[in-house]
Length: 343
Image (tube, rainbow, N blue to C red; front, top):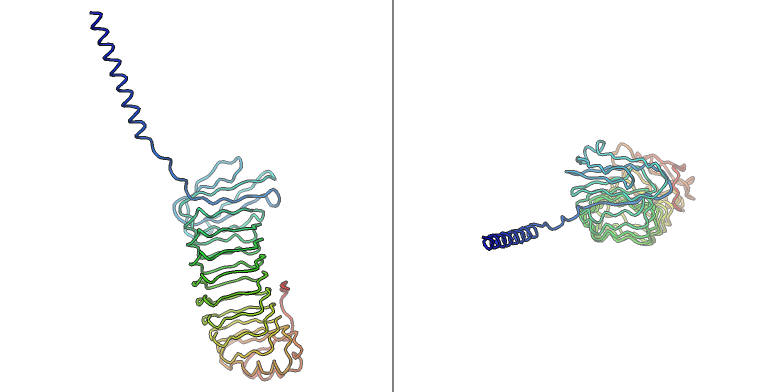
């Protein structure tokens, strides 16, 4: 009888060991691989400056914001950009300390920084669906957007960038990199670019030959010695004020409406092909009265409601024959206007 009990015990023990082994195998086989981390955006709040941060997010599904302090993370339902007023998120920090802010979401398409100029170190490399980024007025010394190939709009106005690589952003339509410290800018791959504002940098050259969709070009306050816009036939606005240009051919730019080329060294300008022109500014360009008269002769006589030419601060301003152009319906302005701080 004792033998039978011993055998039964051993049998039960084997059954238990077998069951345990099966359970372990099942548990191991059911173990899931760790889920990949969702795309995220991160940026830092520096020690100094305002303690308030305000951003606008748009897209679809949800996004979680971790403000990097003791407050709990919050998940928000993202709305389309058309509901931007409902997509505002702000946070106030109670202490003057540095924080890393992290936004997690798979479908963030728009990111706009509204308040928080002491934000630095922006990382958007994980957000491949980002189409619109406005990081103007941030203290950024670098910005990597090489992986954001869906980007249509970039505004990095008044940061501290010394370089900007947009060669991978072939869908880009609007680029504003005004008032940085750029010495070069390659937009040869951005064939869909409609508006380019690179005012207030240190560019010595700018090649826009391949930007055939370009409608608005602003390159004020650089160090350009030449500019070729002959291939930009849909250009409507061109402002190259305060550069070092000695000549500029706009004969192919028949859609040109606003044109400023003041503070350069361009003596002769022929506008005879620019029948859509409404505003021409050639102030501070060292133009003699004869050179101004020649310019007047080439301006069109079309019945456009408002046509204005600004000729102030030229040697020939007082002695030129303004009737040549006023008889064509143009208004002549001989006084200075505005205060532009581009030297």
